[in-house]
Amino acid sequence: MKRTRSKVPGLVFKSGRRVGKFKNAVKNFTDQEKKDLNLAFREAALKVLNDIAKKSPEWGGTFKNSWVATPVNGKGVAKSGSFPYKLSDIPKLSIEGEQFLKATKFEISNTSKYADFAMDLIPGRFFIPKEKPDPNGEVEASGKRDITRDTKRGDISPGDGKARITAPLDWYINYLNGGGLQKSIDAGFVKAFKFRK
Image (spheres, rainbow, N blue to C red):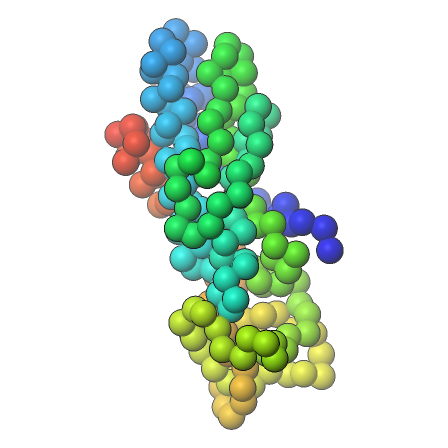
């Protein structure tokens, strides 16, 4: 399976909306002011990475440690890191001319081969790995799984069974659409730049 770059709306962190409000002023920013704004974007992306990793399901740890931030419409490539992520894991954005105004988005994605399953985006067949019978993460719920059909990772029923999940069903979509993503972005901006709405 190819690496996941989810197309779910909202996962692209559109920091450019903040620049858009002050576009004329930003054009006249000094290099230091651009660096400060760059830092604010990176701190916000870092906050998203760590918050979404905390909410991630965790069995062996691969998925939780496979989140990356990639600049959109600008120079820079994603850097691999692991939870807890550090600022050095977030690429710097260009501060050169028009490139600075374009490179104001980060795509947050997960590069593990089973990312779509872990994010409850597609159903599949799930089994307890023999080499890793117990999860690293805290068990969110336990019960039984319908093994006669494909199900989503978090779709288990109460009752006797060996199925366990370490994040609730649809945790990812709920983070995107339930306000969690925006809170993470805002907190990152406040920490780095005191750049409030």
